[in-house]
Length: 64
Image (cartoon, rainbow, N blue to C red):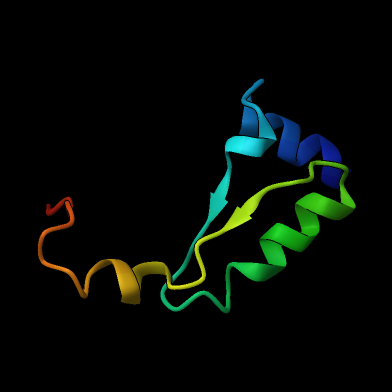
């Protein structure tokens, strides 16, 4: 069941292109582990996540 859910999300995208991120890097890790358990390894983790990304004003940020 877990594998089927990730297959639906990936829609034929290569799992190696997936980068997990969240606010600080901690909450994204369970998703990385779940994808590994489901057989979609390797994926990547941007450990700095949003906190690191937004600390540099030169990086692009979408605003609504």
